[in-house]
Length: 415
Ligand code: GLV
Ligand code: MN
Ligand code: MN
Image 1 (spheres, rainbow, N blue to C red):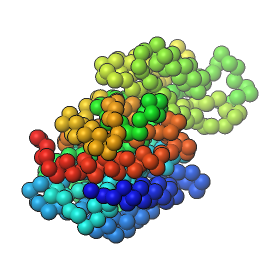
Image 2: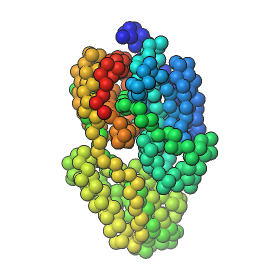
Image 3: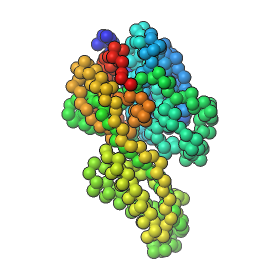
Image 4: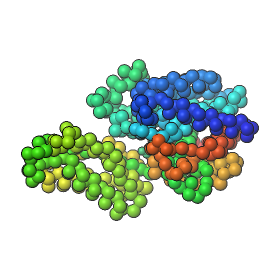
């Protein structure tokens, strides 16, 4: 077992590492690290050097995931994956995703010369947020072999297809099959900040995730007619932004009247985008989440239908496309129990909870037993530069992680 003093030192270093990675951004003055952007390349260089220095072999797979490998002593024991994502939302905090990757490498660093029977693969996924292409989980989908040809053709806002972005980054999309996780992998573990207020409100530092809520995302385009803002009378306009605004209010009302549902229009783009032109075209994103999949799918259908009705009434054309329909996912029961025991051994009363945020674990769970440990989020703040985490909670997460790995070396999972 690691000495407490060493774990505290590692925890301090985890914070420093997350701050160093926060400096790798596509934007000069905030944290915005998108799929295979400039910030991601610098992040790859930093993580590769660190992982090499702790004895890991490193590879960047064809989807841009960083994979660090620490061999075990018994080839028949397979491997344990520890991962999270390296991309961010625009103007993000320093911990969402990155913390889980840094904790994974720190656990390997903490083991030092000690080797476990299984190998450990730490994965930093290239895209979980879906900001660049509007479609999330590109990294983890590649790892479970679910990145199809159609997805490779989706385009970013500059009309660049995903396949071309991969190629321009110096990777080979023809090698995506090699990114698929080996059949000897036994389990996937993800540490992540909670991104909400629950753990803080009950005074508990770490939580164990039982299930991750389902989510739908859609893209809508309201097509009206651009015209002169000074000469076009109100009754003769086909203002795409007014139609979108009416619909957004409808979305808010529908969410308020459905227990447990959250719906967000987080991105809106009006064209041509000038103060003296009636907006002719608006694209809007829609994100809908609920614990019960049938409620979520019913609401998203109703919201898309409402957009079409509003468009018809205002003489506009509306196009809509569902880009994500991800069902709610339960974490593996046995692995979740093992996580709870590890928390108890670290001196933490385990608290079970669901996650409203999506995570790579919900994708990897299709292929491997998956479990997640949450670290309390001070102020419940995330997807915001003020996002933070307590150093003492990182110390506890590292201790729980070591206990977890020890337990996994003595009790094979029943997969
Ligand atoms: C990931 O951050 C999500 O949108 O849930
Ligand atoms: Mn996020
Ligand atoms: Mn995240």
